[in-house]
Amino acid sequence: MASITPANVHVSQHPCLRAKLSQLRSKSTSSKETKAIVHEMALMIACEALANELSTSISGTDETPLGYEYETQTIGPARISIVPILRSGLAMVDGQSHPIPFLPSSPHASFILEVTMLKMDSFTAALETLLPHPVPIHHLGLFRQAVTLEPVEYYNNLPYHNNPPPPPPPTSSSSPTTNANNNNTPTAPHNPSHLAILLDPIIATGGTSSAAIQTLREWGVSKVVVMSVLGTVEGVRRAAGEWPEGTQIYVGGLDPEVDGKGMITPGVGDIGDRLFGTKGK
Image (tube, rainbow, N blue to C red; front, side, top):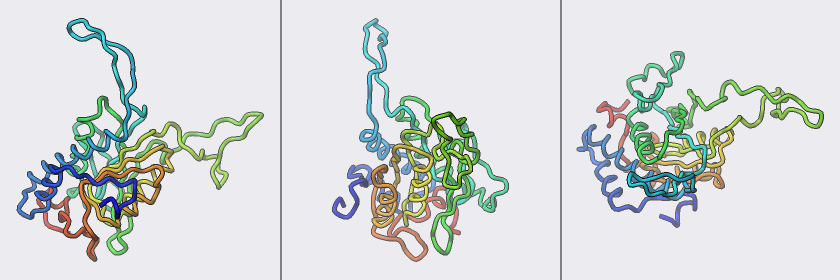
């Protein structure tokens, strides 16, 4: 697989993950089993990704219960955020501990019962299990247009996305940094994450992931790590090429292509429908 994918795409070779992907593909796998398998795969993918993309440093000292002193370690980079891509309607991630993004004026509000909570909750829960401390969770709402299969953004709660902070006051030696329209809007938001962990369970055409990567790059992150259960060769190529020097993609498996409706073949079916036990739209 290494010969047909870019250098910044990492396809897991873990035997257990491959076996679980085979289980996930089966039409006989129930909704309950599907949710469990996605969570287990997310945990393995996250382990592989974070082992490569995080670092550790000495943060101080502490004592064990027996009174022995030891050096404490922390992870880097300092500012990390989790960014689930939300599709198929409105979305919430782990609603018991995180705010539910809700857009009452969204034209997709009729799909409220088809939210991708279960898909994203599996990945988010896996990351929260592994990370030693809580990190911010932002949301990007994207869906694929039915005819063109291109992404359309309907929700974005990255800090300062809709209301950027005011520009710094001018000084005698400099003027405020403005955008191309010279409207006094800063070109770079304040304090974006150093590392954004982008969660997109299925990378089919790659359009949704590419759009999200571009949004995070414009926000000002230094690096994007994408985690996905399954993708296509062309889909991950497209996503990996959006910002190759700043993006690493970790995926549980790759399939050859998508069909005329944008579904991966052989794929895993509509993972949202399978998680909720519903029929395809």
